[in-house]
Image (cartoon, rainbow, N blue to C red; front, top):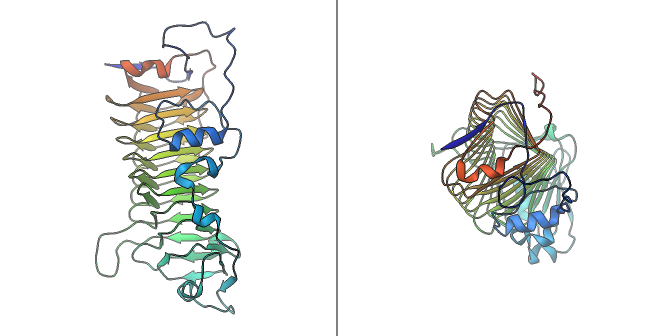
Length: 358
């Protein structure tokens, strides 16, 4: 049995057992710092309610992001790649790099597949649109060691590799303590970014993922990710997939205009979202499958082709706090009766639709 509410209303989670309670005089709970939320999330706590995020997440409190080896890496050399630099290709620079080195990339098109197996920082020296990495086949950037940072570059995927093997993701990481910042990842035949495996921990911030054939961001197999201030748009599959014991926190992200669902939380996946805009997708804004759990705070779900939020039978938990719904083709939300307390109706003004050109 499903419980549905009409469009244009604000949903509020009521604390306690789910029975009707007077909340006007109740003392509001103290907001959780983002570091505490991230720690609980990455520890796999499916019951945590995402009250607010008002601080920067701390990697020290997040087990999948801990990397003692990377913390002890000494400051190394600066290696420069590009026209007139000491290295003309990224491959040459990585062959000479050691842990702790900084690889600075000048504007240009680097038709290479990059395997990062040293604890280095790769940083663009110029507008990110002018620094393009990707060979046209295979995975453009593969990260297999902790403590890596990639900043200020564009990474492009490809349809097929040279041997005619199946297409791949643009960026693949299996390592902890990996940061992608101020990057654009686009045109991958599969996912824009794939992080998988129990050791994988990713921080993705101030970046854009677009025009990928399947998911924009795919986190699976026990991996953890914190995603801040990112724009994930125009992808063929769900913009974000959280699957197979993965744990993801989305903060202040724009997730728009996909050809499938906006976000898919699969079996044993745990998602927390705060301040996100999930709009204009062909399917649901968020769908939570059996075994998955969701906590959403202060998010908007507008003009999606199905429900704003759809929770399927067998989901573990679903809490939606102070979120707005507007212009979705079907009801604002749909959830099993057993989880309806997570969508308890509160007092609020009707939502306004997102801009038509969003």
